[in-house]
Picture 1 (cartoon, rainbow, N blue to C red):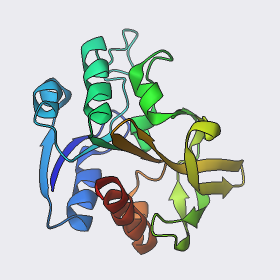
Picture 2 (picture 1 turned 60 degrees about the vertical axis):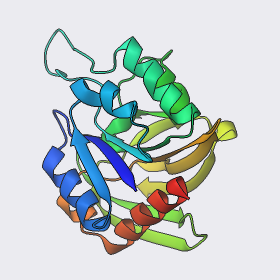
Picture 3 (picture 1 turned 120 degrees about the vertical axis):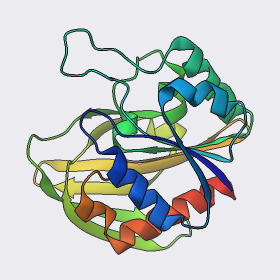
Length: 206
């Protein structure tokens, strides 16, 4: 299985999420890239593209520069539409233009999260129809999801409220799955989340 990854941003550690992916998918061929080489790598039609990088490369500056160019936006759509599979994690749901193809692919996007990390409970059904629940300190992501256009399989709750936390659907010949947890070491070490992540990859690549 060929896997392409684009990970990490100003707020989220590249190395932490990469180490997690390598641990869970230790027997898979993985190519980790920067956005500069995404176009070239998508042409190779990898079986899976894992995105865990928000669109803003300079979120703390006045000139907020996105990595998703109009050309890359269309190429991502073409990749999935032609049979590619997209796994969007946490920050990968953030800061894309409202009219972008990326928003259409994900059928959901990040809105905000409480300033403090909270004990977040996640409950739902893994892709293999297994009931799951887990909790850890996390950024409790609040998202806007087009529930009529996707299958919601995971929900979250904390002292700040309840939210959708995982959803999946098909786009033409390809598949898309989105997960809102996590970006902290504690979350990446959770055995149930590891199982959910692995089954999510298996669903995408089945």
